[in-house]
Length: 105
Image (tube, rainbow, N blue to C red; front, side, top):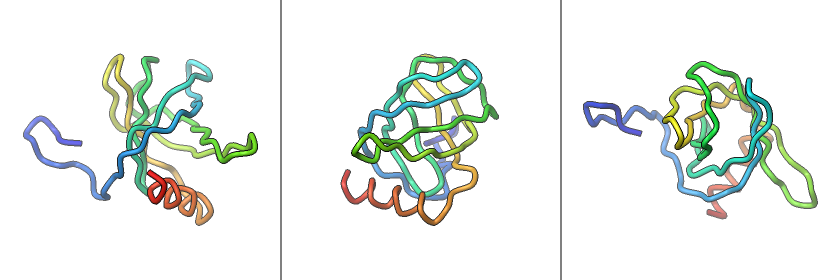
């Protein structure tokens, strides 16, 4: 993601992916779509309102009806488009999940 001066703000490369998820924040549970992912975070397409600094939980489908929960903080939001999440914290098992998502994207 670039800032207003056109400089890249991310420290870790994100990989494009289209993955439908559920997420939960102050306003309750909603659906969304992850559009890119890295070991440090992701971008969620969703028309729901969030605020920078808001804690969210992402529920990523794993197959067989199972979902992996990722906790994170909204670090940037674009009204009516979506929001960037920094995972906080990420376990080794979650890191493996993210790496599998990148490989299968």
